[in-house]
Image (cartoon, rainbow, N blue to C red; front, side, top):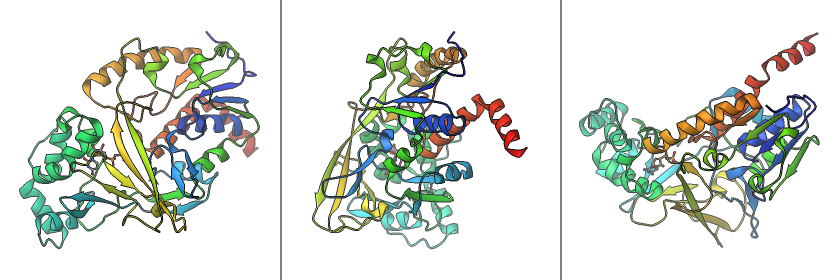
Length: 384
Ligand code: UDP
């Protein structure tokens, strides 16, 4: 058992959403010294962005569009950054036509040359076209029961095959259920109350979160190759892949990765929206154009093509029965470590397909849970 000396610092492994949140809370709320180590050269995990040589703010590991309904998360992040309102809208390039995704009335009208004009007609259309499946067992069943087989074939089947290298029938229903179906003309990708981009970029947000001098940051620092002595820390938070932490003792968990090809063009904009999806035979899944979201003014623009792959950094946990049953075994081992002050937290450590706001919330909840007593005492102290 690691000594729980309160004078020892906190060790955080990984400087992504979960790691930065935990480090920030321990330093700013409890006045702890924190060492945060990161194997990459940059902050913010997959949210990291930077100004490229043409001066365009671009994400290194794929686009991130912030959205949340959670007041706590919104207020928490607003301590560190100004926001620039941005509502994400996505088009899908289906057989030569640009149609809104999520499926809405315009999507149906454009693809089927229909003339639906209101929610009642859209609901009737869906009722006629969907297959009734009470409890979808996989993502194919989830899709055909929500949009019908034709839209599934045109917009979801091949895109998912490219994204996951698996047919939707091999994936749990949750993956397809992430995308809503609309019986109105709303073409926003998300309907959350708060939708915005951090002014100046995500990296700035994370740098501001870690600005406390009590936080020591080390980049290009690989925990597994290091001789860090865990006994020197009051608590340890690991935010990397859980299977790697346990040296793959229960077998490897699958993660899907992405390769990004950036191209800068001498024109203000390349495409109509920040994101266009390609469910057809192209090898890439989508093209994103950050300027639409960041609002940056420039005579140039950078576009990013995404090619799904198995090699490279772990991006998406592959949620299916096989991986989840392996994960359960790791999760049991992780639970045993809590008594030693070691916690596995976040998308990779908990093998969950978390949206950004859920990842912040998850880390905040862990911090609040672990420090309930201390936070209550602090609160009482402030009130006296
Ligand atoms: N998807 C699809 N067609 C699309 C967009 C998404 O089939 O045009 C499927 C695909 O399997 C994807 C899942 O829906 O992985 C969830 O989409 P989301 O946009 O949430 O993916 P993310 O932005 O997290 O990559």
